[in-house]
Image 1 (spheres, rainbow, N blue to C red):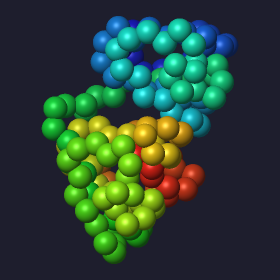
Image 2: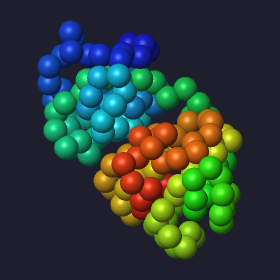
Image 3: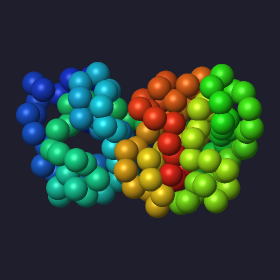
Length: 150
C-alpha cells in the first residue's frame, strides 16, 4: 500500500517481517506516528532486528514524500536557530568530526529528507526530518539533543 496508517492495530498485532516494494517509509512503534522511528528503504526485512528495531511492535507507518536527490539542512547549537550554526549537504557517519558538540538544538531542512541517529555510524534511535523548521529537538521527536550521525 502507498497510504499512511496512523493506527495499524486492526491489521497486525506484531510485525515479524516487512517487505518494502518501493519508496522510503518510516514505521513507528506506537500509534499516531509516536515512539521509536525506523526508516526503511526498498528491500526485505525478515526480522525486526534487520530494521534495528528494539521489538516487533509496529503500530503506525507513513511514506517519506520529500526524499529527492538534493539535500540541504542547517543546524544550530541552541534552540530557536540561535548560536553557532553549520550547513550540511551530505551524510556524516561521525557527527562530532564536523560539529564541536553532539547536541543539535534546532535546525531547518531546506531540501531532502534527513535522518538523525543517536549514535555514530548510523546506530541507535532514528529521527526523520523532512522539509521545514524545527525550533527544538522535541519537534522532531527527540528526547535529547544528541546526534551521533546524519
